[in-house]
Image 1 (cartoon, rainbow, N blue to C red):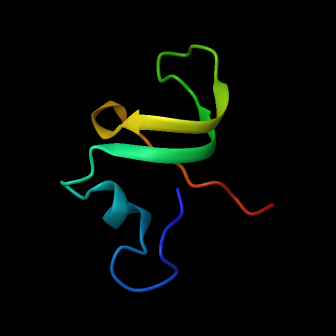
Image 2: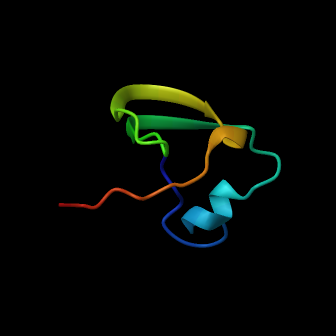
Image 3: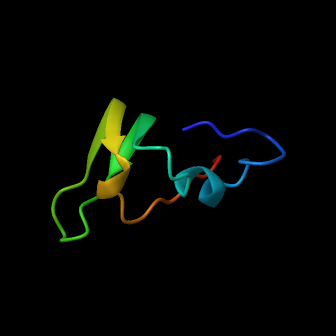
Length: 61
């Protein structure tokens, strides 16, 4: 997910909490189940926002 570098919507929380946004398009995503299941990765993923419980931004290292 790429956010604007500045201005309205540049914060992750602004983007995630948009009511009109029903799906996220994610590139190079790592998904980890909250129930302790096995994590997995996807090069491209369409994810319904209603299924998201936690988002952690990637680090630049």
